[in-house]
Image (cartoon, rainbow, N blue to C red; front, side, top):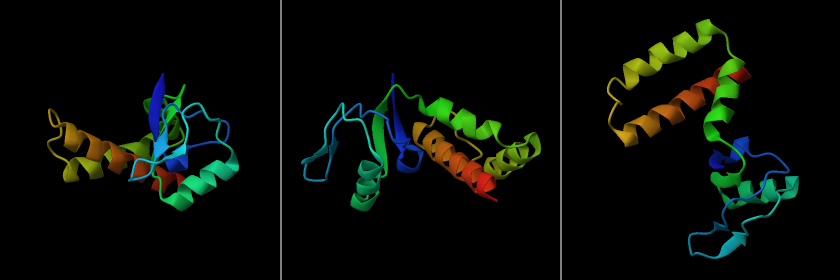
Length: 112
């Protein structure tokens, strides 16, 4: 099992499921590397926004974030996003944009 996670979801001790390369194809960090706090800081400095990590399910990470919010807050977020994304079914690009927007809204609500 592996999952592509946003850099803000990456934790020390996670293991890379794929090489991280720059736009020229040069390997920055190799698959199988256990990430240290320094590695994560370097990835952020390089502008890496997502990485593929082993043993992590992106949906489970997002579910955990949802569980920290009240049903009222979740309902408010869903209503707001339904107005912005009325038709996402059957459109993978819009579904991904919706997922990203929802995650952003969850994080925003958590930090308030």
